[in-house]
Image 1 (cartoon, one colour):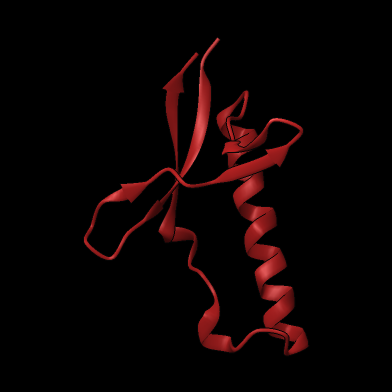
Image 2: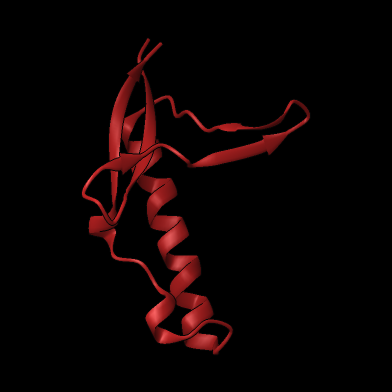
Length: 76
């Protein structure tokens, strides 16, 4: 069964796989069972950031665009 990762665009036009999870094994790249699960994680992250902007915890220019993220298949 394939796994999926979230990548973020870098300023140089490349993409980076630095979406991580921390658990009992430490910090490691997070993998998702489906592209939909990975996309849902992006949507949740963006909603959390927007909530911080709306509440004043984060400046308006400290947000992210959905275009800065993509879901890629990374194998098993």
